[in-house]
Image (cartoon, rainbow, N blue to C red; front, side, top):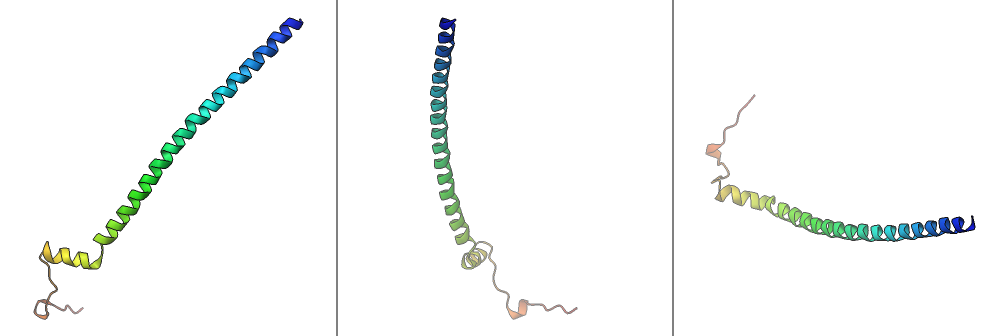
Length: 87
């Protein structure tokens, strides 16, 4: 009887130790994954900031006017090209 109790307690201690080792391993794996995801997030935030600056530069009124004049050959209409429509 006493030998069986000792064996059960030994098996419980070994199972507990294996559980602790597995838990620590899993914790480390998840931590490494978290660090990788944080690096990806940081890179995406940098890219987002760069894209916002690029959009602001391209949407500036002076830039829009320059593109309209050079690429689309647009110009401000003069008085002779202006037609006023009355209701």
